Length: 243
Image (cartoon, rainbow, N blue to C red; front, side, top):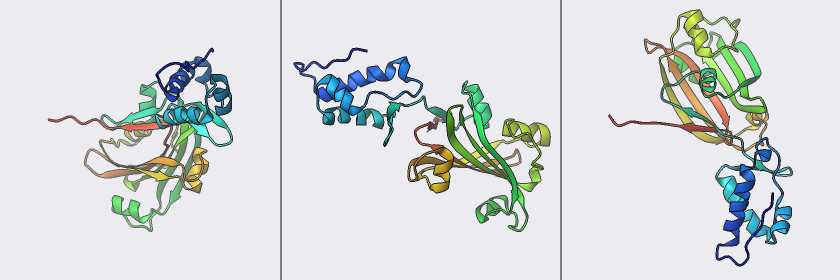
């Protein structure tokens, strides 16, 4: 790929550099995570300063088009996964509908005493164990979300279910429980040591944290779900319509 800067142009150098790097981003050879040329090589090739190149790169990192990792380099960001809150589905169903292949990296089922927040939501005592489901999921090339779900004892899950199937399909077809309402709280936070190790990111990296409270057709609570998403791999959108 031939790249060059017009030093006689009235267009600022960093703007020209940004446009050229966008050309690199669009090149199919970099779509699979291959590192783009580094600052030193780009600056030398274009005969401009590293400061100018860095200014252009920083803007593209800010836009989410590039991912920079210290000690590794800069690569083109993969296409972000997007989720909408209206007409919600289970994660598996939603990703399947979008044509996004999903891999389960970890799946753990256990019986635990509910934390106070979960017991309060379910309106149960903290001395009775409930089912906890933990799943680390993502694209084939790497995980981008860690889920923790707690289920009300009323649901009837045994822990022997095939949780590789869509969760709400299991509830409806196997246990006659229909998930009808989802209430959610979404916030940004820094990854702690545990979450960072799961998502393969650095401690303190930004993540999107989502709490989902799921109810059945009788507005009875059935699931308390926590989701921890890599910030550079997931976009959560919300659509509202004025009646």
